[in-house]
Image (cartoon, rainbow, N blue to C red; front, side, top):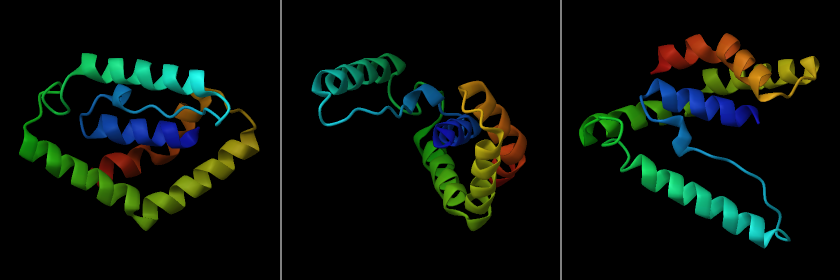
Amino acid sequence: MSVNALVKRVLEGIGVNPARYNLQWASAAEAPRFVKLITEFTKKIRELGPLGHAEGIKPDELKARINKAVELVNSQKLRMSFGTTTRALRKDNDYSDAHIVEVIDAKLGKAIAGGL
C-alpha cells in the first residue's frame, strides 16, 4: 500500500484532492464487492466535482501540474528512492497506513516537493 501513500502525496503536492485516487483489491470472484467499490468511488468523484474546477485550478495550470507530476513519478531518482523506502518498510514490518504515510513523507517528502 506504499504506492497509495506515494500517489496521494503527489496529488496533494499538485493541489489535487487525494480523495480522487482510490486503490482497492477485489478478486474476480467478488463481483458484488467490485460493484460496490466502483459505485461508491463514482459517487465520491461526482460529489467532488470536475477535476481542477473543484480544486480552484484553471485548466492550463492543472495540465502543467499534472505533467510535472508525471515527470516526477517517471524520474529515476524518485523511483530508486521509492524502492529504498519500500525496503525500509519491509524491514520495519509495520504495514499500518499511518506508518507507511510517515515513512513516505520522511524519506520522499523532500524529493516530491522538490520535483513539483
